[in-house]
Image 1 (tube, helix red, strand yellow):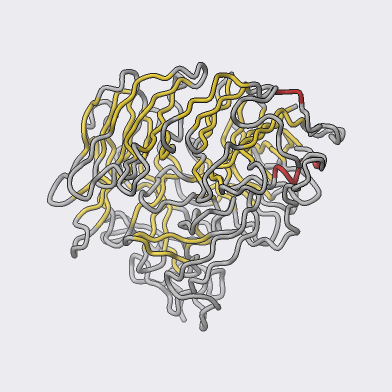
Image 2 (cartoon, one colour):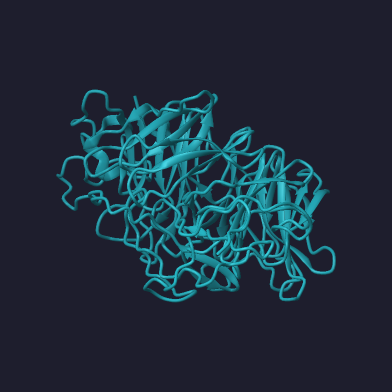
Length: 570
């Protein structure tokens, strides 16, 4: 069969198969994996490969599709956090790609197991790397380095006394465990532990009904925990420039309870600022579930079909974003330093159904530009807001696309690298969670994506935002997965997973020059690799030479105290 111009030859990864793999068909629900550590192996999804090449934007086969994401096992199936590779573009002209009248590279096939919920598609992702499993926390509290922390998450512990001797077995060259906290008790059904915010003084973490703060150096309580009457249901993923966040909690416990109670918090002092109640929108647009994002001095609270903006300093309502045009409803928002992105669903259920991306003035809500997306394509994630890098999927074609939009909303480039990528993107059932991905980093000119680590050590690929091609790639220094964290001082900071016989690493990779070796910034202790590797559904951060790891989901297990947060440093 003749290949479309510039596409990889048949037989490349994701090429259409003659027979489907074993497992369920499209939408077959997958069993959630057992608790595991960062990047712990997960069951492979049962959703099969397409039997025929799925058409790309020009009706040409696109042999690549979404690949399993990396990271902590999810409580529920999740949408693939990162794709496997687009072929090169086959030209330009009208009708191409998700953006009307613009070229786009589409990939199809080899998708993860999908679960259709309310018309939205999710997938169970995982590495399944075949490595020896990371040892789990012992039930014996006397086991060195594995017992329940004396410093619980409620702030009642004595900070840096290290009562468990977590540093007793530390070898030369290994970093210290600065502190380690266990989680508060959660109900048997589990509870969210969203958000992790680091300032120069405090490390702040939400869990179930409380927000905790620890001094970054030694883990001493920075301020008394804030306790809410009901469970926390949403948080701002980022903090404001002056160190403020907003937390939302439920207004009751019934099935009709809403996620509509807002509380502003100062991360350094624990001072509670303004409060507000998010009003319902129209019919089918209640505040049962909301998403929060910060852009400059504006907080946007997004419902399923609208959004309300608040002044972050005072809590005063600024404006509403509601239905516009014939039938376009704002469904998701993503915020940056001075940029606010809105994604709308238009003409849902009709022949003209499509998504639109708009940029808003955060202070006024004025629409600065709008970009329609080609029918059949859904904007799932923003890998970055400034520059704007979006991840789109096409359920019917079982295809994905990563595209870059410039400051005027013009489609400028798309990823062209032939690779199987695997960033971590969390579960998004009732909302799109545009900013719910980690294990991906972006600077002004480059997108950094991790390749799949199912075969062991993976690579990070630096992709030009100008033309979508690979600028360079570098391999993990171990046989474990390596994932971007952030770009700092012109260098990429990445996290290398722990193994059964070694702690994790934090490494620095030069983003310029002819070579890109990974230089070790921290070597976490082997003595605590089992604890480090056992964080459930976790988040990571790097700030001021310290590495932070925290759970984002509590299982509610009564067998032992659950892990909440851990910090490493020299």
